[in-house]
Length: 94
Length: 485
Image (cartoon, rainbow over all chains, first blue to last red; front, side, top):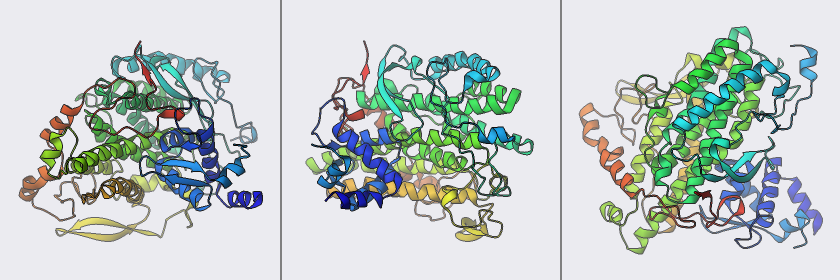
């Protein structure tokens, strides 16, 4: 199971991999647990990653298509979760 | 350029121990350091006088750049805004970077200003620099009517970063343009947005930003012009300008999000009320204390058309000479597959011919402003499409649209013409009869202003805007983003 995840990550452009890292950090390592664990949202991601909305939404689609994240809720209140494959690729034991 | 200059170490960490934080080794350049340390108190005076009003004592939860890498480039904490560490941050230098367009293509990027381009480069930098303090001045009074602490904090974040962008440009003026540059840096603190005697350079930056709807529209449309101008300058053969603007783009990205999300939350709230109470008539919607979609469309028409003027005339010999000289590239120049000279290429430009709007091929070199503007429009349309998902989700038929590029223009091929939002060419009488349907009236501004009250209780939001899903930096919406004690 591990290899396909890494393969999926490798096929993505560097910017998408970087966005994935920011999503993972925001989903699991925020300073206050004021929200469900494992969820990241556009405001916090966008402020942390330095992407503008156009770049962000394009890369997010790539991460979704690669099966690394799941996007729920409607614009502009999307919630982004790492899929099981996505969690594995971060090396998290959660 | 000497071999030493092309092989020296390129990445400096940001040094926050200096009076002026920087990653350009300012301590080793005593003359420039002293000059900037003399400019610093003048900047702080300008901030106190024209920056956000009555905010000196507030503690604001702000991000501050700690690295020029996109991954992990900022940290967050409470800061009193006059104590914000405005500094000079350039992305790392690429020692083997070459010029990739224009007459100097394939030559090494310039580390100093070539004499032949000195005047043009100074003009480009001053024009960009002038927009940064201008927007802070335009937004000076908004804090008094904030819809929430979350929004107030976002406004202040934008403000301090526009101030930092001024620093970025002023460093270039001081470091590379000698006495002329220092004088220009002084003048940047003397001009004032909307001042009849000493206004800011570009018209859009002398307009009022009198309420939060105007602020969000400005951040969505006008800051996006900034993004495209900065992206074109990030291609520049003058390497310090390219490296400066690249990092500015990282900060600017969030400003665009603030604008897009702000308008989206307004649309969301309006649609919630329309659905809950089964309302469609704009006056009934207004009576519920939210902004009707028709009014939002008029603000879209205004801010889009005013921002189009910032791209300059559709046909421009200045744009051509800036490109050929290597001073300013196209958006995404590096990724465009052509000869990067444009000497024999054409680009379609709309113009008025005998009362009709026609598409005419123009030499691509002189049509560079149009090309940049068209890229801007495509991106704006994508954002509008996202906005339009909101009424669609609520089952509301209204969709916002972008007006024709000839609508309400003061600069370029359509200046002085009367063109409706659908592209229909009108007589002056027809325009005067209909324009109130298309552009925000004084009554619209009065209505929007009437909704603006100050909401500063943590977690509370004004009635006319929906809360965001989450707060800043993974914090809850109820977080005290601004402390008044």
